Length: 419
Image 1 (cartoon, rainbow, N blue to C red):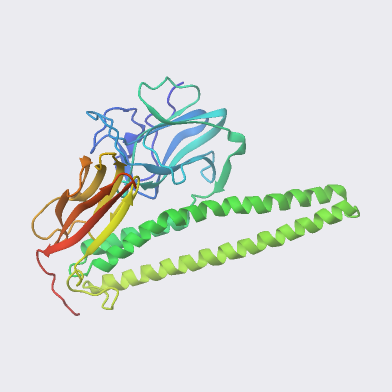
Image 2 (tube, helix red, strand yellow; image 1 turned 90 degrees about the horizontal axis):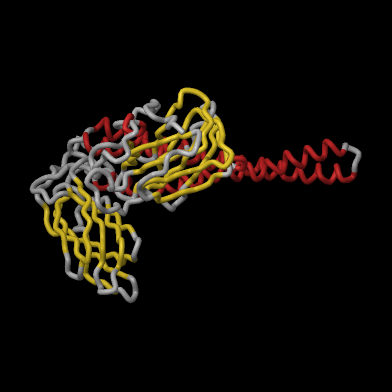
């Protein structure tokens, strides 16, 4: 019945790590009471020794903590894993592309032994950070929660997938490259940030796909090598002179060849991607050495862009519009029957002058708007460029709204330099 994770240490050096195991499940707000890290990333709790686990409960930030009255629309995607030896991990749950927030409860039908519990945070629809308010691990049925449980699952532990190592190395590599680029833009004085911000946007889009590919690799390998081992074992038992054993041996051999070919394909693909990522890192090192930008058509120095930005997007309910050029992320929560819309916007503060703060670095805020009608607009400054964003049309019969964002002015210019 006791919470085995209470006050247990978190392995990773992440922000406010101890909050995830301090037992506080209501004393959290928008800026305190949770552990957080850049996604993708992990939070791993060491229970101190092997423990029988019958239930794991997770509380992801939902806006319903101290003083909160309405659930935030954001969603988190993640994987829940456990291990005895820190090398072989059981994948207890994977949200896939369907994310959640709030309380999630996982009951394990027969229980299992583990020492380490890990949440592998993959995405957050609101920003670049993953927020964990609390993680509980129980060896028996815990006391019921007095709040809404968003997700509840009964897990059959006998048929869980397993993986070795820390998992998803390519995704971690892409995440580290994004951090490198963001740090570069932030610290290099005269670097043209626009192409780098576009690269960051592209890499963020690729993160989920890279994750899906890597999660599929071990699964496919098991599907291929499992029958190989099974059929070869049958052949050995039947005897080498048995006709059936001979046939089974041939089948096993064919499957082994297929498995071998698949592994070659995966290794070549993985190697190619690794090489491409290393090439990007080398270019970043070149840029750092100049301090004014890598002087070619992709990484020039001087003013941020030359053509005024203008974009129109048709969005449906549930769509997410994101632009790292303007710094805006907009979520269409609901298109109402009266041709109004409920939306959430993560956008820069309306500041004057040169704004050199990157998304997620403290100068952006999330706002929720209900019953927005046609003609509603917002004006904001990102870097030194002013933008106007407006809802130009809403058609509830088609479940469609049209959003227009355009550049309307510039506050100052960055000098064009050569080394």
